[in-house]
Image (tube, rainbow, N blue to C red):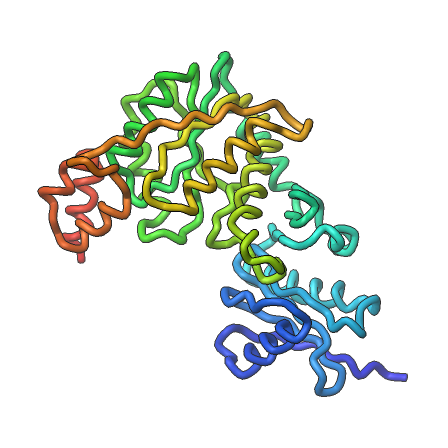
Length: 339
């Protein structure tokens, strides 16, 4: 008997079909990941029975109707999604899911990177992590204290510069990772340029382009996490576990430096998680000491990138001059001039 199951593909502009996917996911207890760009659905006649989506390099919203599980629909949906990704020039893909799906996604060619608290997993379909660690290892330095910083710098301020300088003073060598995702007001290529200019006087530092393995809260999927109160903590734990178990060993990192966080509750909680996770490893790697450095202040307030963006909107370069290096100031003036 001929199968009545059909598969179709569409993008986020097809609002009517997107709404149908949202209703389907909600009906089986999943939230709708709104950032999906391309969709695949499976229907039996007119009834939607499975779906999946592609958001950049991340596969999201993959689900099958409970009564149709075990029929191989996930593999078919994944095959369609991978073909879409390949047609867009995207070959290295990631999946965040729950641990009960490990074997399922392994059958689709994905490999486990991290299983965090047996609540969330990260998997990939390539050797990209292995190759990234090999590239990092080329920059490994000897020393008792090998420091690290992960920095977004949106944009680079005197506060960022102070953190790098203080961390470098306390380290034999310092590795600075720049968050690579272009989800900030300032583009990655501009942020890393300003960082490199701002730390060029520091002799014992290597500035690294970030990677997909420094997981941003902006791309961390939450649609399958039942307890929304856990979202920020699970994001922090997964990101820090990948750093501890994969990136840090490649460079022999022994310390991670962070600025104190007087304003943002989410970042402050992230820093608390950092101490718990990095300083108390689960046996896979050595402990990494977390060192908090008091944020530098100007006029009694901690210098922040958000303050820079606020002053830039007002065109207040007199105040900006007090809280950014001259290289950042010149960049901001040029940017303002072009606008």
